[in-house]
Image 1 (cartoon, helix red, strand yellow):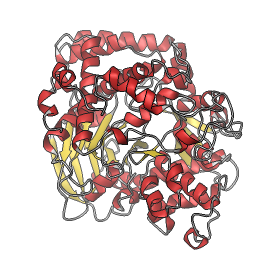
Image 2: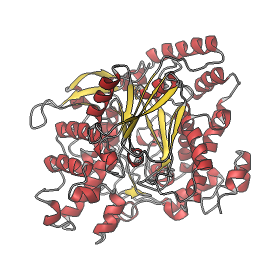
Image 3: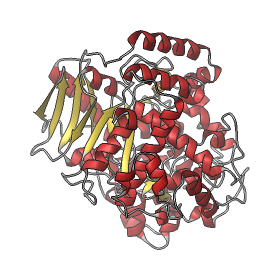
Image 4: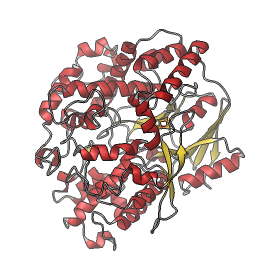
Length: 584
Ligand code: SF4
C-alpha cells in the first residue's frame, strides 16, 4: 500500500474505493470518514504537515479529499496513529480522545452548539493540557451545511463538506496528543537531507517573498492578468484591488503564524482596522478568502473580509463555497429572482458587506434564506430556477475558485476534471495563473492537456506524503529531494518517476471512484457563463473557454477514451486492472 499509494490522500482513496459500497449516501452512517496524516508528517522535515480528510462528499457526491496544515496531523502521529477510519453514528454527541496509542470516545453534549474556538478551548480545559491538538466541527457541521469544514487550531480541511459528514456521525471533535516519534528507516541520512533542504530554503528568494506575504501576494498578480473573477464571474478585473491586497493586509498584521516545524511561516494573524469590524482578529485571510469576500462579492472593505473569515472559521464553513454561494444569491437578488420576503430585510446586492457578513451567520445556522444557501450553489439554483443555473458558478456542485478559465484556459480543464468538483487545489496550473517559471500563454489552447496533467499528478504525490504545496512551488524543495526523503523513511530507493507514477495512479483511482458513482464525460463541464459570455474587459477580453478541444487533448494525454474512461492498457500499466473491472 505505502509504495503504491504513498499514504494520506492516496491511502485514503484506496481504502474508500475498496470499502465503501457504491451509492452510499454521504450523510448516512454507512459513509466513512478517514483522517490520515501523510508518511512524512511529524518526521521533522520542513512543511510536512498535512492531514487529509477523505470521504464521499455531501456537496458533490464525488470522492472528497480535503487537506489541512497546522499541528493536528503531526500530533496524530505523535499519538501513535497514522490515520483513522470513522464509520457509523454515535448515539449521543461525542468526541474522540487519542493519546499514546489509545483511543477513547467521550460524551460531548455539553460541546454541541459551540463554535470551533470555544469547542477547542473547552476540550483543552477538560483534558487539562494546552498541548492537545483538536480537529472539530462548528454549528455548520452539526446542521449539515453541505460545505461545512473541519477546523484544527485555525486551519481548515475546508472544501466539500467533510465537516457535515463528521456531524452526521455525532462526532464533535477529535483530540490528539502524544510523544512518539514516527519511524524513519535511515534516520541519519534523512536528518542530513532535511537540514540541507532547510538551508537551501533560507536562501530561496521566491520563498522569502512568499513567507512575508503568504498567499495574498497573488491577489494583484492574478488581477493584473485579467482572470480575477469579479461579481460572480461577470468580469475578470476588480477595480477595488487598491483596497483589497497584500500590502493593505500587512498594515493590519499582528504577527506571523506557522504550521508544525515549518520555517516559512506564511500565515498572518490579522486584526481589522477602524470601523464596524474594528478589533476582530483572524488567522488569514488567505488569497481565496480575500477574493471570495472581496472581488467575488464586489466588496472593497478589507475589514469586512477579515470579519467574514473569522466567522466562517468559528461556524466551521468553507470560505470559498460560502462566499461564492452568497455572490450567486447577490446576482439573483439584483436580477429580481429572489423575492423581498425571502431576503427578510437584507439588501443583498454586490458590494454590501454588512449583508454579506449577516448572510454568513444565516447560512451557518440554517436560518431563512441561509437554509437554502447552505445547500450550495447548485441546489440553490435548482430551487430558484428562472434561468439562474446559467450563472451558478460550480462544477459537479463545488463552487469554483479564484481563477477565471476564460483568462487561463488550462484551468478550465483543472476545474472540469478535478475529482472533487470545481476546485483549483488538486492541480493549479501556476505557470498559467501566476506566470510561474517556465510561464505558458494563458490564452492558448495548445498543449494544455499536459499542462493540466503534470500538476495534478504532482499534487497527488505531495498531498499523499503530507507535504504543503506552497514551498515546493516557490523553490523550497524539488521532487528529487521529496523522493529521497521518502526513500529514507521507507528504506526503499524511490525515484521521482516512481513518485509521479504513484501520483498518476492515485488520480486514476479517484477517477474510477467517480465513474463508479455514475459520473461521466457530461459532468466534466463548466458553468454556461464561461462558454456563452465572453470576458468583457482586461487582458482576456473577448475570450470564452473552448472546453471540447481542451478536454480531447487532456483525455488523450491521460490515455483515457473519448468518454473520459481510463483505457485498459493505462490501468494495467498502473496496476489498477482489478479496480477497473468495477467500472462499466
Ligand atoms: S508554507 Fe505556510 S501553509 Fe505551508 S506548512 Fe508552512 S506555514 Fe503551513
